[in-house]
Image 1 (cartoon, one colour):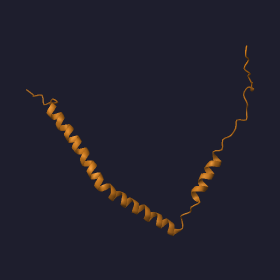
Image 2 (tube, rainbow, N blue to C red):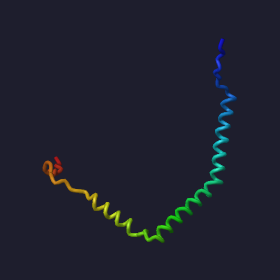
Image 3 (cartoon, helix red, strand yellow):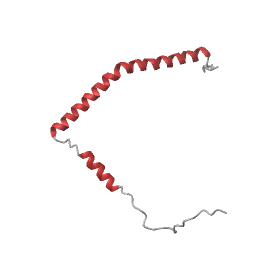
Image 4 (cartoon, rainbow, N blue to C red):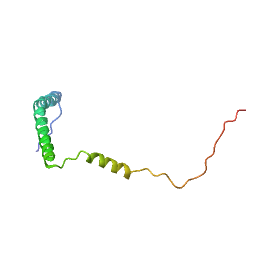
Length: 96
């Protein structure tokens, strides 16, 4: 005969799980405080090196962003509808 191997939930098991979750949260929080500045510094150094490399190659053009913005602005001009529907009626309030 086979035994049923299902485990039932218990209050001590629930409390233990909650403690593990809280412990994991604080562990991640502490490790993030230690390693995030290191990661951010390395990312900033890579970005600065890339910027310097582009600047030295002459690919850096300050007006590129302005030209792109102006081109996008002219391409999305709003057109007024050419076809008018109905006619304008001006109402006046009448006092009795």
